[in-house]
Image (cartoon, rainbow, N blue to C red; front, side, top):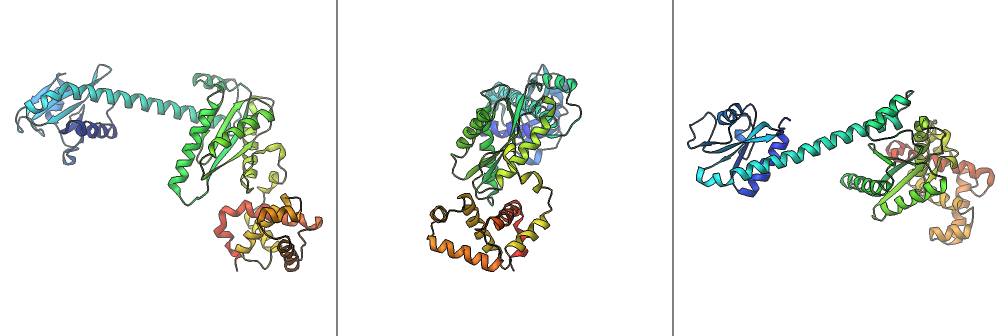
Length: 390
């Protein structure tokens, strides 16, 4: 293997902090690629080249002028898989640094071996993740025996019947970027732990979502699994987990269709205040809403809530969402919103007078329902939506 500069510098820093001496790492060409003295990085170290070329077990330098680009100290080969891949050197008087020689050599080789295993593991995981992403997230025409064979070589049997859940961790304060990433990683850890209870379950991280392919089961069982995951993730106070679930399919070849359905269910989940788990089979308007341009949605909201500012519209959305969720009950809605019943009735009456649409009327309730839905849909792009606030 090649000795990377990043790994070399990490090892140099670790060893130097332990022994308290100046340490250098040279590659097989004798170039210093890492050092506690940054001014020496990139320079030629003749003694290191000699160790590699002559397969020496150690080369001691007593004077700074003995070899080009060297200082007094000891230099030892770094060996992996019976091949010298570099040289580690400790600067200082021989009697002072010789006691560290073999310890440093072994420590360096162990650290490099550990990093080599880690990098290989990461490489294998990346290859596996790319395959899973290709299999599930991309609309392929070749989900067939050939792809199944590829999967088996990576330890994945794609012919096993599975269902798809797509999850989105949401940080309550989205302005905190560091917290958002930390929460995403936290959610992944919890989800991976739970899914690993079944060896046929698969988890894939995308830029913003977590895709879970789980062993085939009925709606009740997958809902229980999703609920367990949601509850455990949300034990952390500032995170909410949105979850969308597909509908059962007849063949592994249609896994991408399951993914698209789970994505639509997730989008429906994220549009609601409660972020309740949603099944594809239980969504309605969401099936076509994604086809409507945001400009049209914005225009519709402005038309229904004409005369209201953006801030006022946001308040009406919360009130009406609660009102319709409580099946139009004045008592239940006022209790949920912590306002008096008379105040609520006055607000609804004023909305009717200003817009011309009565939110308590079955005839007009659908207009407000659509406006609420569109508002939630484009809420993330609130800056462009700010035209409403006039």
